Length: 535
Length: 93
Image (cartoon, rainbow over all chains, first blue to last red; front, side, top):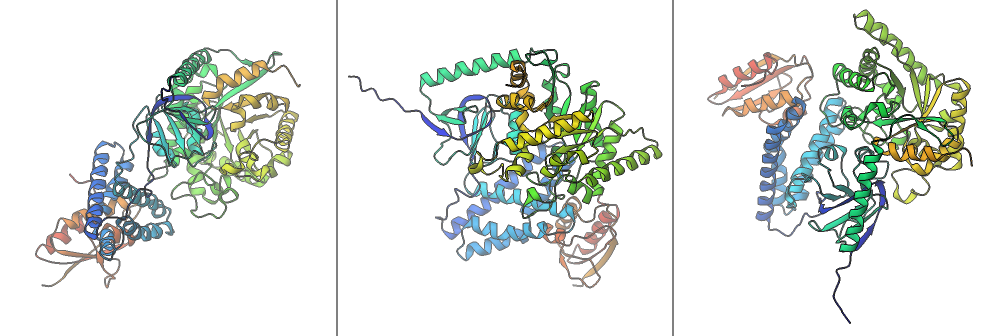
């Protein structure tokens, strides 16, 4: 008998967050603190800290040479100056002399500074806490012997978690992402889906080693380490099939129709202009959701009116007359913005977020509304307000918008009042939708589900509960019925709309306008085409 | 050696934020003298070469910034710092 030893492929289960398959080398990013050791002598710890600070300073200086924009340069210069400041480093050195480990001493020195910034009244100073935290972690990574967290392109990355900024800075071609934390509705997952990067979450990454071959199955939610040649060949074939399907998908044309010939609109969700490069505007029914949060994140200053105006305008131009639905800033909840949202909100999803925050910060809100009113003269722009809970909120936004249009015209700008709609994501708004005089309704199923089910979408253990139930579908039907009765549009722009398996159920509720991630266009259109009416 | 003093009104739009603070501490470090910064003529005084301390003053727009310096290039140092603040933290060469 042949006892040839086979290396056994090792399969690790997780949860699917973005579909697709990647076969590539695995690279594990280490969490900043996990590998810090305490085994060095005092002198060794001192040297380790000094080396880590010097290495971090060099990294930052190198980065500063490469960046082109002023804001990034200012942040880097600030971080470099901090590392060169004895007032920051000296307390750490003293603690190490007293026997503390370098990484604990460094945290003890910088954490009080971070806390001071977090507690500042001035939003600008509060935002600097992010820069200090980033600096703390950079030095910690160096201390743990880990090179800077620059992610190589074209690999499967395994990490604890990943901020959207790091995701956006990475070349994901043929690669994928494996996270321990995060959820299918985290921001990184949204980005991964819209860019076609396979991703899974909830994975035990402890025993993963860099350098091994792996297959990431974003559909099944699994990572296979060291796949045997048979399995590997099977996945290679699936990758080829997917590529073919993508090719076929990009060749669809004409309006989306059900099997019985009924017209269904399919629009796309986007976060910025970059995603529009690969989408042919003639193949979609417009932009059903443009999330503006990403314009506001990871920067020193909030975006100016002109900067926002340019982006909104270019989207309207891209759409060439088709609707472009721009959601006003939906900060708070799982989308904190340095200097704007309140840190340490006890229950952020039930806190000051969406329109609640906008109405409390008219200084920021007005800038966005001015940019939108100016862009509205160019194309078919629509504006929708997130997290509306009572009719007064919508009316206050409308009044403010009208004032702003008058104000702009008074200043000699061309400005228009676009249709003003609302997100229906709070149960109070869905149940009493007839009380809201919105020009259109867009159902935000991610939040609606978690509010109706009282189950956080970021809690992996409640994944089975944070699903669309009959109660959720009932509310969706109610909103669609109301919109139809007053001849207004109701669409659904949450992740639910992009799940082919849910398309028939949504059509059953009367929904005829879907807005999905660009990557879901083809499968959703295919599911619509299979639908032949209520079962 | 005597301390010499100077003061200047800061008009920078956003106050003593990261960018101006970086410029100020960098310039202060170019001199040998010990240089202190305060927001009133009687202090409290902080080290003008420390970004941590300078940022912690959170000096808003229209604050008067007081300097005192001690050392052989003290005069040149204060002249340079006052010019920097007076000219609204221009970009250096």
